[in-house]
Image 1: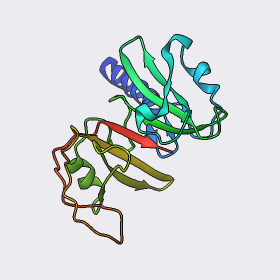
Image 2: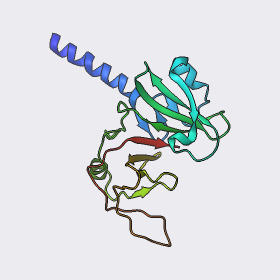
Image 3: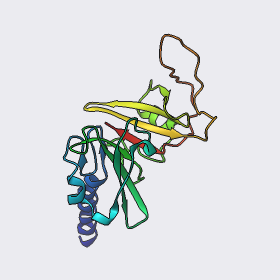
Image 4: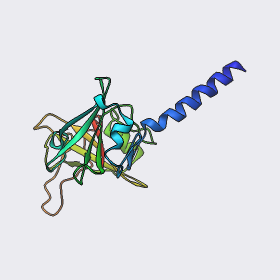
Length: 183
C-alpha cells in the first residue's frame, strides 16, 4: 500500500509540475503570448532577466527583448514584444525542460518531429543562413522547431523555385532542434 501511495504522489507531482514546462503555440510555461511584459518580473526573479537586442535571437526589427536565465545556468527563453514593450509578441524557447504535449522539444530530432507530424517541410530562415526550421501546426497555432548549423552548411536540400519560398522534405533527420519559437 505504501508503494502505491508513493507512486501516486510522484505521479501527482509530475503532472502538476509538467504544466510549468509545457510549450504550446500560445505559451512557454507560465508565459503567454499577449500577456503584459510585466508578467516576467512577477514570474521570474529580477536578477534572472537580462535585456538584449532582439536581433541576437533572430527577431527582425529594432528593439530589445528579455533573456531569462535561472541561477546563472539554465537559459529558459527569450521574450520580445511587437508593440514597444507592452505585451509579449513572441517567445524563443531555449531550454530542454520545455516539451510539447506530444513530447517534442529541444534535443528532439527532425526525424522524431516527422514521425509525429508527417508531411512537414523544412524552410531556411531568410535573415540568418545558419537557421532552418520545421513549422508544426497544432490546433491552436504553430510552433517553429529550429535547427542551427554552422554558416554555409544546411541540413535541408533546397531546390530553386522562383515562384515559392524554398522548402524541402529532403532534410537530415538526425539534426537536433536547438530552439522552439512561437509568435
